[in-house]
Amino acid sequence: MKLDDASPPSESSACTLENSLSKILHGLSQASGRGHARPAVLHDLSALIEAADGDELFAGSGTRGMPEVLGQVAKALEKFAAPPQEKAEGGDGHSDVPEKATEVGLLFLKLLGKVERTAKSSPVCPAGKTGLRHLAGPVYVFAITHRLKQPWTSTRSQQVADEVLSLLLRVTECSSVAGFLCGENEDDRGRFAAVLGLLKPHLNKESWKNNPAVKHVFSWTLQQVTQPWLSQHLEKILPPSLLISDDYQTENKVLGVQCLHHIVINVPAADLLQYNRAQVLYHALFNHLYMPEHHLIQAVLLCLLDLFPVLEKALHWKGDAARATAHCHDVLQLILTHMEPEHRLLLRRTYARNLPTFVKKLGILTVRHMKRLEQVIIGYLEVYDGPEEETRLKILETLKLVMQYTWPRISCRVVVLLKALLKLICDVARDTSLTSEATKSTLLQEATDCLILLDHCSQGQVKGLLSRIVLSCEDSTVVSCIRKVQQCSAGVPE
Image (cartoon, rainbow, N blue to C red):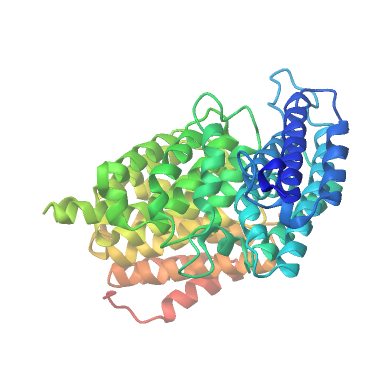
């Protein structure tokens, strides 16, 4: 018998299987348009997966090799289930996406189940692992796209996507998503680079809004990768993060800034300073401070506070240690400029929430901003901030820090600050709003602590001024606060 008269059955079968998958791949590309909620091609693929032998399905024979063809099919399935571009005129463009995602998810579960069974039945044969190498990336992108609550998901599609991710982690023998992306051991390089490669074509200036899920998949995936694995991918993750943060929509700005923040805290300073990346980040973030959106301001300030040490390190290396805090001074100056006339409560709270951190950061150098800080502190102590009183509590915390760091400059401001604090105590004592007694008590205690500290900074001047007030004051709450100040021994803070 001549061996060259006919192909061996296994090779012939693999070629037939590959041809069938190629037809399915073509069918999926045709079915990606609207109006194909349940294309027959999905049923054909489901039947093929069930009927095919695992070793043949994931074998490397054929023209291109089955694993590569399967990878292309997985990419086409992920694209088929992806949400369409959001329409400017509104309307529900995602109504058929959950149904598609559910069907595709069930197919992925079937395919991954086949991989798992093949690996168990043929532990020596690497066919399953070979096929998984091409499948893992597209399956992961699909799962992250549909597992969280979004306009294009339903409870059922979220559940299926979550099952797909769990099975993917089990089949790849990974204990977590971080392990899947970064590798579980030294020999495992992870799949973060592969996932970024799949997302890259959809994360440029022209295409990133064509699929509303891409930014969320990128952001969520990025958050799972920490140091030391992130720095080697810096050139791939920094441009998309800057692109998303530079959008006109506040939601996208916040998402982009959160990505930048994750990069700042997980990439070594030396890598951020290379090619002037840190300065690029700083200027991009600084420009966002002009946007009157409290969510954005909060995200930007948190990111800047972690970026300052990196920028300071650069100035130290250049021998310019005297200007090491220049960036922090510039940001605080802009914040105080915006705080003074600001009347929107949410923005006032956001600014006040971060002010103590800036004072701690600058320490005694806060003295450069004393005049404006004084105006902001007095102005903000006068305004009721709702039942939680977060703004006034944070301003009192700021005042205490300012007095501790810059106490030699406080004596000339004793009368102004004393009036502001006494007015606050009187307002809280007479307050009949929804503010809880616990919050009132905290406010009074903080204001009293500030008075005690002010007395220490002025070497007892406050006690002398309060001794006249206590004789004519009839409010027991106010008198109680004054008595506490009088009972404390005077002294200058160290």
